[in-house]
Image 1 (tube, rainbow, N blue to C red):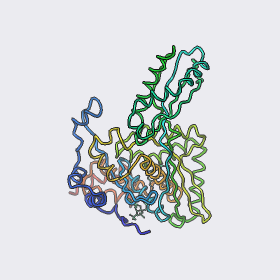
Image 2: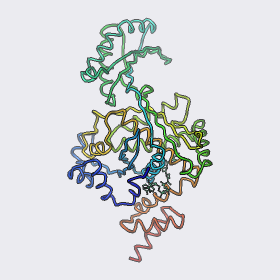
Image 3: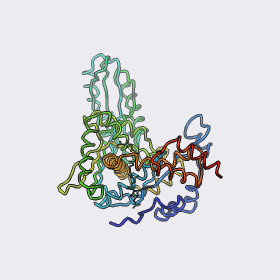
Image 4: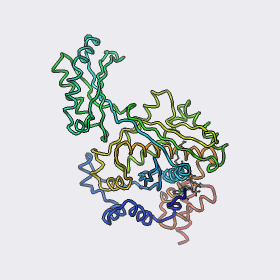
Amino acid sequence: MPNRFSGFYKLTPKERLLIVAKEANLSSEEVDELYKTGSLDTDLAGKLVENVISTLEIPVGIVPNFIVNGKSYFVPMAIEEASVVAACSNSSRIANESGGFIAESSDPVMIGQIQLINVNDPERTIDDIQKVREEILNVANSRSRTLKKLNAGAKDIRTRVLNDPGRSVLLEIYVDVRDAMGANIINSMCESVASFLMGQFNIETNLRILSNLTPNRVTKSRAVFKSDMIGGSEVSKRIVKAFEMANVDPFRAATHNKGIMNGIDAVLLATLNDWRAAEANAHTYYHVSGNLSLSKYYLDDSENLVGEIEIPLAVGTVGGSTNSVRKAAIFRKILNIGDSREFSNVLASIGLAQNFAALRALCSEGIQEGHMRLHARSIAASVGATGEMIEAISKIMIEEKDISMSRAASLYDEMRKKN
Ligand code: HMG
């Protein structure tokens, strides 16, 4: 399938922005907003978090024509690390040859936890709680009219005795949060249910909070990468071997999964979603599942490489701070996702895309070639170079295969003296 956006990266930022603006139907005000820097007013920032003194700018790049379930997305990624956007664009180009990524997400069910402490008779307390199951669900659901209207909200409870020294009892509430991330609503449900329980029984509650581990809110994505586009089936076989190592060795798994989160976090940051929750969720999920790698790879009958990812994702398309910062709202508009499951489908797929790109490079020419080539510009900028000098210094470093701060600094000095 021909890529309409081939060579997108060769354009200037303004040219790229105008293409995205046309495709995403942005107004001229929205385009101006995106083009200028410093658009998050420090006073507004002071309303979002505490003790504000300034704001921080992070580059936002676009992965064009990222196809998931047959729909083409412009994916915004906020990231300081060179080559991640290029990597995802490269994977997307390869996956698109086989129809792009195919993804699906489960119902958005999250868990709220209430810890009961100093319990004399844990089994009896569990019996008591189970007897008022319906009341607990009603109390929880009284906290959200919206979820009730959507036939979502608290659906079930589970109880168990914990293995902690004090034998706490744990009550867990299972909540379908639809398109919310879920933290606020679940926390208020937990607090209300805890008050209800303390009123009903002579018990003491301690923690009342959502769990950021969401094994019931999981997304799967899959793509086929044609072996003849990645250096042949030998490279595909090496990628399978790389996955097999990541799945058993925690030291490799941390790096392998970091590559996946490079992609996911960058989209979460561009749309101002909670990437710390996504990190905690993903890493704990693989820790308890026994599989160390969040992705897996195998060859199909035609010796093409199949990549799959299964990752818990709790992201919202309503609520949170996504709309309080105008640029984040515009990036959401560019991404053009409907509900939270569609959002998760794109996120899981971008994680797989970044992972595949890194593995392809690692299993063939090595990561330094592509990554460091792109990183060279950022090294040149960090020693003080600006404008055309950045390109000139990075070009020489790439040719010399010496991409380092010291070489950049000496080239910068030489060029300044000459000018
Ligand atoms: P290449 O094959 O030299 O590039 O790859 P190309 O010039 O043939 O272009 C191919 C496509 O790549 C282009 O398609 C673009 O989509 C994209 P086209 O537009 O021509 O139809 N592309 C770019 N996009 C944006 N800006 C660019 C650019 N260049 C190409 N400048 C590439 C070059 C860097 C893409 C490749 O070497 C690559 O994918 N390398 C992997 C880089 C990577 O994974 N970086 C992530 C950070 S490192 C990481 O994840 C941590 C790690 O530790 C994880 C782990 O260990 O698993 C590695």
